[in-house]
Amino acid sequence: MQIRFRSKRLGKALSDPKEMAKAYGDRAKPIRRRLDVLGQAACLSDVPTEPPDRRHQLGGNRDGQLSVTIKDNWRIVFVPDHDPLPCLPDGGLDTGQVTAVEIIEIVDYHGN
Image (cartoon, rainbow, N blue to C red; front, side, top):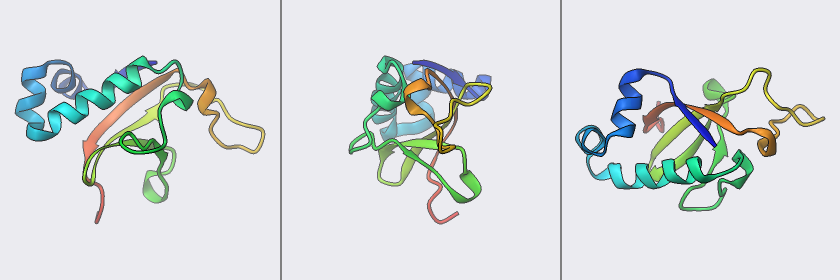
């Protein structure tokens, strides 16, 4: 799957191992593993929904976003990078057709 980053700063932090370690400390290795899973997947439906990856759609003020688990409450948050979004007949996201994502942030959004 193609991966794009919301900002140059985020792209640099997630593309360079030294920058990743500096920015994310002990979360750097699990972040790298999740990015590898996303990058090796042919489409979003190939990313596991079970732990440790646990791909899932978000709701509320994060409607339209998805995430994968890094560690504890930390997540890689992303959106499908398609226009228009591939949808199922019922209006839900067709994860089998999502072949590109945009990483928005690395965050612990729980409690926010």
